[in-house]
Length: 281
Ligand SMILES: [Zn+2]
Image (cartoon, rainbow, N blue to C red; front, side):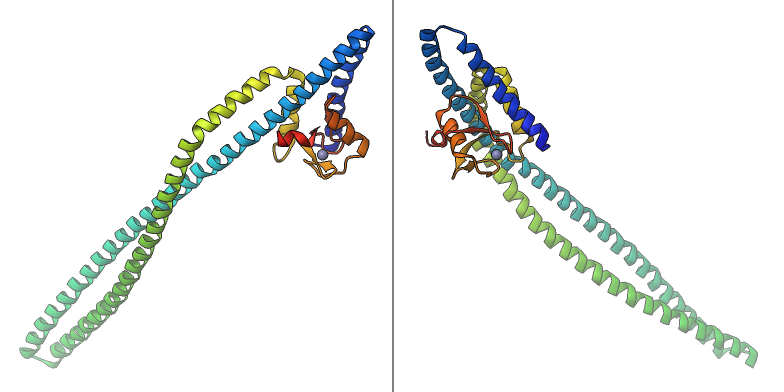
């Protein structure tokens, strides 16, 4: 929240309580005394309720934070495992293609060998040198063909070895992730079963309190809470400072806060300040 808005928010809350005090001052003296006592009492109650609401909301926030990350982590792990499985499937397919390529090459070698046998037989029965030379060239060519096929088969076999290693490594990674996934799923189900009832009870109590707090104050509380990074709208005074932004609070203001007669907000961060003793109750 911008500093200006914070200050305006602070003024608004103070104005609200100031207005209340002015209204009270128009009644008769004895009534005033009585009303002031009542008003003091209700102010204290009001602040106590606000503080209790803050504690409840913070606890609900905590539960949501813990659970809020786990489903995402589970989803991430499931996605990763699926990615690994896809990778393995793809590599298996690649290996099959390479194997069929090797099989083709082997057939090529057999064909060349057969041709060589055939040409060697023919060479025995040539009628002239020209025929002999022509067959020699064919033999040489088929010999080169065999060499080329065998070189390629060697390379492809090495490739398959690499691919198989890749599959093993991917399987190992997937196995690790599966263990992690099992743990996370277990953790999530435990948290969900553990906190579901707690959260329900917290929400019920928070709603009860919200019904007891005047709407304007509740709106202010929600606004401050929404804009505070840690979700804190009501804080106690800690070591002479605001428990929200840690800026020093002057002694007179601390005294006013301790009296709990009105809603006092931090002039720096706009959070509602309450007596430190509230935290011990
Ligand atoms: Zn502050």
